[in-house]
Length: 308
Image 1 (tube, rainbow, N blue to C red):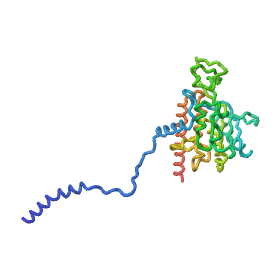
Image 2 (image 1 turned 90 degrees about the vertical axis):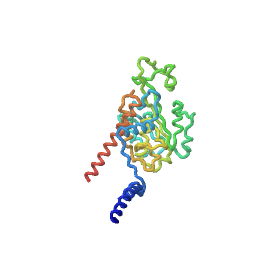
Image 3 (image 1 turned 90 degrees about the horizontal axis):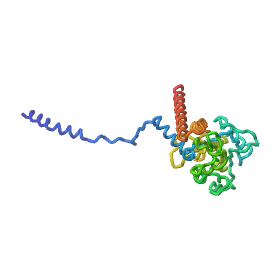
Image 4 (image 1 turned 180 degrees about the horizontal axis):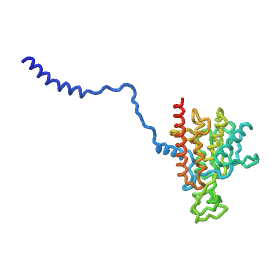
């Protein structure tokens, strides 16, 4: 009887013991928690690059295409020793030819791209320009604000002409004067042809000579190329930069040594587009081209690693 009593008692206790074991808390993990996130999809990556493109290209007016040069550029660089200035100018001209814009190499040509390195005597960038400066008087009010509010050691702007489909200036109708404040002369506007094109007729870039110290001539020339051939600003200092770009030259602790694949896509796709291509289409094409270049570079890197 003693043995049977002991067995019954053990059977009665076992379920309770098992239940306690099951309800016990699992041991807490040791060390930091690691959250694994998948890489962005191709669509997500293009979206980020498109938003970034819209951020750094100075927005055209409603329904206007992004402005670009329609004729070969004449480049002048000032404020440096003559050999350095000419080296920068030559590299900008070479880029203009590579992108199909062309360059006017006549030493007596009228400059349409001016890059000036400002001496310390000119003071800080905040003193270079004001709302009343003649050099930016042709800009609309919001465009002057973009120039004057730019942070850092650079100020840049473009002169933009509004044209008809054939590249001719037109007389602005009364209802469109707010849209096209800079044009109200020359040819009558044909209301039956609503196509509008925009042309960069001049670009200027002022760079602090002290801030430029330590950079290579190639870096400075490539930075000037992207700032002048396209109306651009430096990336915002408040947000992340999703693509390496020469435009971060004066903000990045380790800036690119030359134009990146994103920079080349930015300029190339804009100049490959038709003259009246919408800004939205231009942004999409730039993002697509930049994403494809990234994917191609990643594939090449993987193949090189496998070959080693």
